[in-house]
Structure formats: C-alpha cells, structure tokens
Length: 114
Length: 116
Image 1 (cartoon, helix red, strand yellow):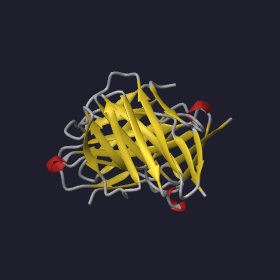
Image 2 (cartoon, rainbow over the protein chains, first blue to last red):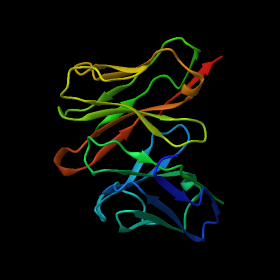
Image 3 (cartoon, helix red, strand yellow):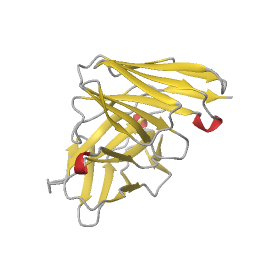
Image 4 (cartoon, chains in turn red, purple):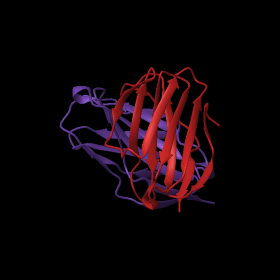
C-alpha cells in the first residue's frame, strides 16, 4: 500500500446527511488533491491544495467543501448531496503542486447517496 | 480545451505476450507532462511511467515503454512480457499549468486483462 490513507472506505448517506471524508499522507508531500471517479468517465480533479492553501477549484458544487488543516491532512465535507454524487472519491498527494510530479493515490472512499 | 482520449475500453493479452495501449491528447501548449497510471482491481492507483514533453527520448521502465509522438499528440504504452499482475485499468494522464491554472486531465481508461 502507498503512504496515502483514506477513511472511511465505504459510506452510504442520505441526501440530507452531513458527512466528511478524511485523507492522510505520510510522505512529507506539500500538495494534496481530491478527485471524483465515476464509472466510464475520466477522473475529475475537484480541488488542489499546496502548502495548505487551495490553489484550484474546478467548478465544484458548494455541497462539497474541502478543508486542509495541515500538509498531511485533507478533508472533504459533504452536505445535501445528490444521487449523481455517488462515486469513488480519491485523494492524492505529490511532492509539489506542479505538473511534473508523480501523484500518489489513496484507496478511495466509495460513496453512495440514497 | 485539453482532452485525453483512450480509444480502447478493454483489451486482453496472453501471458508473456506484448500489448500496446493507445492514448491521444489535445493541447496547444508546448510544455507538459504525460503519465500512465495503473489501477489494479480493488487496489490503489500507482504510476507506471512518466514522460516530459520537451524530451524526445521515449521513457522506459523495465517491461513498460512509451511511444511518444509529440507532433501527432500520441502517447502509447507498450507492455512487454505481460504478467498476470499487469491486469488492471490503465489511465493516460496529461498535466500542465498554463497561465497558473492547474490542468490534470485523465482519460477514461483501458481495462487490460492478462490471460494465463
């Protein structure tokens, strides 16, 4: 396994619930990312953090709210989600938030919105 | 807008044989990076190989090599001596940062099955 962990691994939530996804990296990296992976669709980059500062937000609905308290931890707060938000949410980290660096991925959280 | 196209949703190859996965991309920029990532069943995505666009030499990593054709905007992955452990989804990815905006674009993936 890589040095990026995600919890929970599976989550089922109703549309009115509030939940959070957690990601932790043990690699000493300065950049962290959230991706959405849906079946038969490309990975969608949602958020990019560099040194705890959000540097990219790819037009993600406000029902997804990221938080990066330090360079090792990343959260994705969820509220009033829609069924189409059901997907695998992947966290990744890289040494720097620059295009040449390899990203290290976590195992993902499988989210089902009912 | 930048795009990445993987035209082969599924492929299979006999163990010990060679297989090539295709990837094309579209960009107007000259400086960028290309990657192949592998996602085994129920396991984490890992990097297979990385190519810098300004380097003409094709990248190689043991049994994995790429055929990078910059003018044609093509970046195929060749797997030699295929092994059962190569069974996975393979994603081609394009990364650059024009004008300060981060662009990380992935293809839809190719599901490769290595047959015993």
